[in-house]
Amino acid sequence: MEPIIRVENINKTFSAANGQVEAVKDISFTIEKGDIFGIIGLSGAGKSTLVRCLNLLERPNEGRVYVDGKNLMELSEKELRKERQDIGMIFQHFNLLMQRNVLDNICFPLEIAGIGRKEARKRAYELLETVGLSEKAKAYPAQLSGGQKQRVAIARVLANNPKILLCDEATSALDPQTTKSILTLLKDINHKYGITIVVITHEMAVIQEICSKVAVLDQGRLVEEGTVEELFRAPKTEEAKKLILNGKGLGVEEVDDYV
Amino acid sequence: MFDETTVNMLIEGTGATLYMTLVSTLFGYIVGLPLGIILAITDKTGIKPNVVIYKILDFIVNLTRSIPFLILLILVMPLTKLIVGQSYGSAATIVPLTIAAAPFIGRMVESSLKEVDKGVIEAAQSMGAGTFTVIWKVLLAEARTSLLVGVTIAIGTILGYSAMAGVVGGGGLGDIAIRYGYYRYETGIMIVTIVILVILVQILQGLGMMLSKKLDRRQA
Ligand SMILES: Nc1ncnc2c1ncn2[C@@H]1O[C@H](COP(=O)(O)OP(=O)(O)O)[C@@H](O)[C@H]1O
Ligand SMILES: [Mg+2]
Image (cartoon, rainbow over all chains, first blue to last red; front, side, top):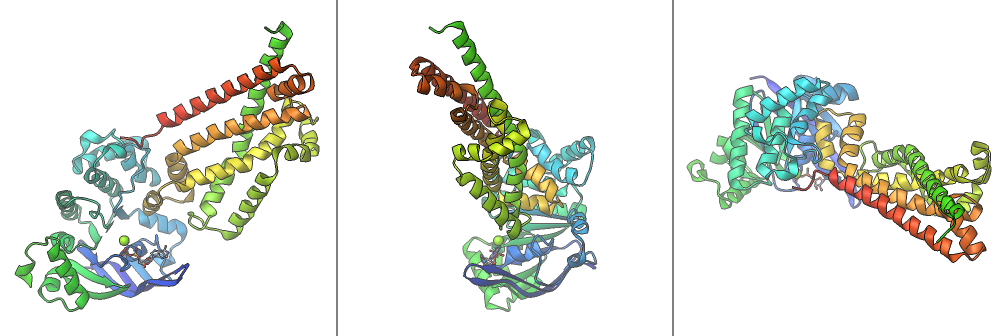
């Protein structure tokens, strides 16, 4: 398998009121094309910062971020914007435009990409079908449930046919059943379109449900990395063990089969 | 109650007040809207942080806002004369009104735009949106309800200022109120001008609020 994301020695330090915060410390890893790659860690571990470094919403202080062989850190502002159209992102709080209806939300990335209104609408209707929300085309986000909002966000992110989909706690605001349906949708998308998915979460159940590989983040450092199976069978670090145990308490099934 | 000349004068005064208010609001936004956008995006948490630009504009806005309108009115008279050709009358009042309104409008626009969810801005950026797209399609579009409430407040405030301009012969209802009520003790006329001012403010505020509610899609 060929790598689609390669991160080399990235550091990100924030200067806060009470001194420096090293959110990401010397992290390197590779994600292969078509994988569903999980990054797990406790709150404050640096997950959001790390995933934002993958599309340079957060620019690392040091290091290199290669996407499809291109070092994003060396691109001009304009080139970077173009590149971002290939790297979709979904969020915990959905981040839909509240003053636009569902259809126009999905058209938004197409507008940014300079696609005509008619073609954009046609594509938006197709995508709504893909996520099973055709009847909500004219609804406004405020009229939708959390799960429906995340489906709209997923339709929106698919609009530009991205190669990569970054998910920052995409199911953390949803109930278990809705979480499951969204994870199933993400799995389908991965299968159907071959989109590489990066899943950020603090829940082991999510990792177990859809990821093939996983990296464990602790206080800004990547402390363990491997297949999900390996992690469950033989966690090497205390952090990993703790996260598995936490997950058990929260209803992760089948952990015993691995441990 | 009043003779025809008085009625005509009141109608003309109402027209002059509306003219001063609406034109000044328009000019106020021509300056204040870009000003507010620049303030919002150059602040620390904005999409184009720039300490120098923010601090300079912030200082100018604070400075102009701390000058009482009556003083400003007199202060800018030479400028008014240069632009309009005279320093009294309705048209002349538009100059100080605009100068007083622009920084105040800029501040309201800034605060409206800062209410827009950072997550939505970030989502747009993750799709490859540039600064202009974020301003136009995210900040202004998402904040439109709040911006319209701002317009309503601006109109009310400027209307109040325009009445103050009556003190220096600025024309309009304020002018009438001062000439008849204060100098000639014709309390009747003064009360009528006040009533008209109150009704104008009520109508304009009501319209503005109705429009902003109608355009808001946030409630289920
Ligand atoms: N913009 C920022 N300014 C200052 N500190 C930040 C900023 N963003 C994140 N941090 C800090 O970096 C650390 C990691 O945060 P984050 O990446 O959000 O963690 P996670 O997503 O794993 O909960 C935290 O200590 C957080 O307070
Ligand atoms: Mg986070």
